[in-house]
Image (cartoon, rainbow, N blue to C red; front, side, top):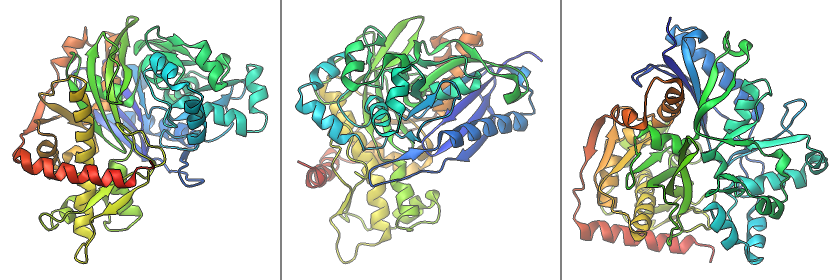
Amino acid sequence: MAAKHILAIDQGTTSTRAIVFDSSGRPVASAQKELPQIFPKPGWVEHDPEEIWRATVEVCRGALAEARLAATALAGIGITNQRETTVVWDRATGKPVHNAIVWQDRRTSEMCAELKRGGHEKNVSDRTGLLLDPYFSGTKIAWILKNVTGAQAAADKGALAAGTIESFLLWRLTGGKVHASDATNASRTLLLDIRKGTWDPELAKLLGVPRSMLPTVVDNAGAFGITTADILGSPVPVLGMAGDQQAATVGQACIKPGMVKATYGTGCFAILNTGSMAVRSSHRLLTTIAYQLGGRRTYALEGSIFIAGAAVQWLRDGLRLIEKSADVEAVADKAKSGHGVYMVPAFVGLGAPYWDAEARGALLGLTRDTGPAEIAAATLDSVCYQTRDLIEAMRGDGAQIDELRVDGGMVVNDPLMQRLADTVGAPVERPRVIETTALGAAFLAGLQAGLWPSLDALSATWSLDRAFQPAEAAPSRDRRYAGWQDAVRRVRSS
């Protein structure tokens, strides 16, 4: 059988999935496993790297079994991952020295504050495009070295490796032969000079991270390594890697400057393609690498929302207002019109454009007749308001937003998508394939495998499912948004 399928590994914050795509970019089989969350202290979030590895192998085998394909039918593997989540492991044994510290984790807030007080943020931002925030990987590595017994000494001797999840998975898939990170994941570490595409020695010294720990930085499509035969039954080349939001950008075919997509999963992340220009935001958006192919970098402005779908999970698991996440739409539909309730889901601080690590969540505007319906509606509205925060920042940086391409698990909710269009005042376009994160990883691997000749050829496969047009009058949407801005001001730490 000709090897014309791609296996995409999508290792996310709340689950690990594998999807088999055919040569037309159509998903033909999948398997998924939920990932347990570990909360050692308030504001701390961890994952067990061994659980991530076990689940990855399990879902890859499961997806191939469902597709009734042998590993020999695969042209290659693409990996996409929760970005910034950080693992440090022993080079000799491959065993992690500590749980993975998740991107949502805020334990390095004080370290970031200290670096800001030392006047380092401008230099860091100029080189990396990022801000000094616990969100990013560099301070997580530094925390592990400082707090795990013997870790600093081992790192100084070159005995430890560090990386984000795709790097850890590539190491394991290749039996410890390859330690590499793609340019998009590397750009989220506070350690990469995004204009040079290389690790910055001054930043590594500033954060106390030995460069010997860091992976080789590679393109998003390339021959990265070959899996050991025991994992899938035959060796398979790993040909594509990208952080989840950049993978979704490719999957959404946002390959021309000015195109913007927003992915709604645990958090929400909007990425605006800026082409070959690494644009500096004046509205506290991040400058990042959208993708790197053939050594050439395409840049983007990004707005990061830490809590989107996770707020619905909180309604389910924390408040027990709903039995399953899909129930939120029916509950919210019963909310009284003009209820005036705002939910600011700052459970782990606020991301763009506020970057307030110490802000905390709140429900505001409660009255005696507020009930589950109003709280559910306010939770969904918070996703729309936070998206408008990002769109307004992009517009402030000079972008003209003609439409917003959306993807991720939340976008199947039609009323929510209509509310989103009304709130941001722009058409919202949902594609036929909403799992664009995995699709982007498959596309990148398929580019390297020769299944698709170019990014333009990938763009031709994008297909619209439905466009949601703004139907609310501007004064009404602006009044609602002003209420949101007031609610955010009330939860800010300063």
